[in-house]
Length: 208
Image (cartoon, rainbow, N blue to C red; front, side, top):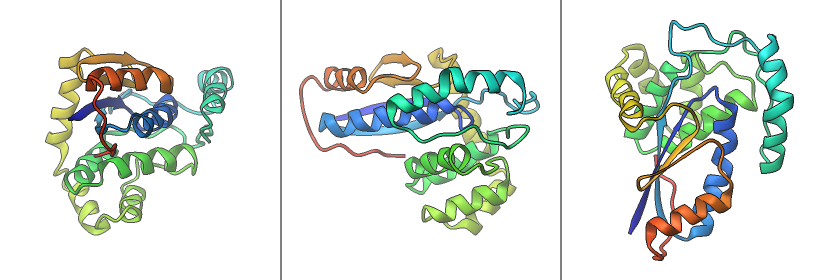
């Protein structure tokens, strides 16, 4: 039995990066055959202005909320200096390319780490193409696909699923119909996986 997980997130959401760690730990510990699908939820779609790291909001929320939560989960993260923060629509179109080529999970992880650990501008098509190449995708084909906006419609359809499911915040997990909002403890996710499986156990694998 394969368990399906959909995770709504955004590449500029630090809590989404933190949430990945307990999810993968729960998948490994469950011993189940799990398929993870990352779903887009643009917090500030273009042309909505994005946040600036030098402004009071991020300077307040990171020390108060982000850094303590990341430390509890053992996640290395820092406030990126990219200002203003990038819109993420193009990065999500890149995810659709990666997913179609069997590298969706790797792409999601690589883009999050590029932004929150390496301070790279993930709104830049050249940066995204470099990241795609690093995970084994054809960087030139990726770049051309994004330049031509070949995956714009697929991305828009994926965004529509958030509205259909009533998703209003990220991260949000849907595990076989059960919905969980916010960073979830490994134990909570593990219980949800085992409940969904009805006690069966197989080998786990993340998938794009």
